[in-house]
Amino acid sequence: MATKIDYISYGGKNGTEFACQENLRILQETLNGKVNLRFVEKIPKKGDVLYVHMNPNMYNLGFFKSLSPHSYKKKIVFVVWECEDVPQFWVDALKGLDVWTASEFCKKALSKKGIKSEVVSHSVRPIEPNEVEKNDKEFTFLTVFDSHSQILRKNPMAVIDSFKMAFGENRKVKLIVKGANLTRAERGFFREQQQINITLKEDYLPAAEYRKLFFKSDCFVSLHKAEGFGLHLAEAHLCRLPVISTGYSGNLDFQNEDNSWLVEYEREAVKVPYFKRMMEKEKTFWANPNKEHAAEQMKSVVKDNIDKAERGFNEVSKFCSSDRVSKIIQKLCDF
Image (cartoon, rainbow, N blue to C red; front, side):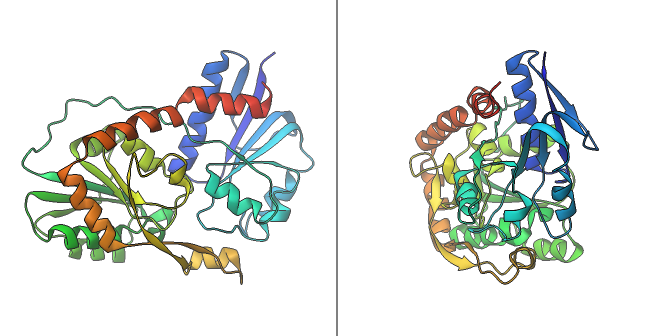
């Protein structure tokens, strides 16, 4: 008889949620009939495996308490956090549950509060390029962010500053800044940053058009303060792009000096209101990437990028492969 997995998410339609769903779909394909995946809106009173994708926060603690009476053989909660410490109230919220997370960075943050967790990386399928014409006269950098994922954490402003530092208004080099869900103030700010070689794309793009952005580009840049995993970074590697990124947090599970252009940083206290509110009075940290070093890395990529980019593709293909991730889940669930 097939094991039933009931999946419920209150995480919003973001990259992490889609990645979690992809992992479970791959598991279902791999086990070929041994697993039956159901997407549910309300939690049944009993079942085989309950898989919840949601971080505890101050407003949903009642939901986590409500999980106790439900009779499941296994109750999994997938959480992701982007600071060096998780909130103290997570300790009680996650008690008695099997906690999974996306990276060693997240696992370390959880363990500092005594919360045991298992790392289940995101599986990312390589994307075959469509017929896309690149502009050989320009070298194009790409950075992407969603304002709903905390714009100060994603830190696209630093990418713009570093690009200007490296190239000024050189027309042979271009930066595309792809934003989503910008507020009016954010939209105004980024429009003011545009110049002859910097373009803001703020409109919604269908998946196929979004992927074309990667294939039209020559290098992907992320000067994040922290990433729970770094899904866009993995996707960029699998498009065979050279990748420049902050040498910090969840992306270091699959990035290193041999396959990426890592940017130096200094640790800084987190001052973003959302994280400060969640942490209450407790202090926590993340990275402040060095913009001068990022500018140097940008110049370096323009000169020579083929070998390192190919290593990135090969290594990330293995790390994010459906076969590897499926085996991790099978072992944890004893399928």
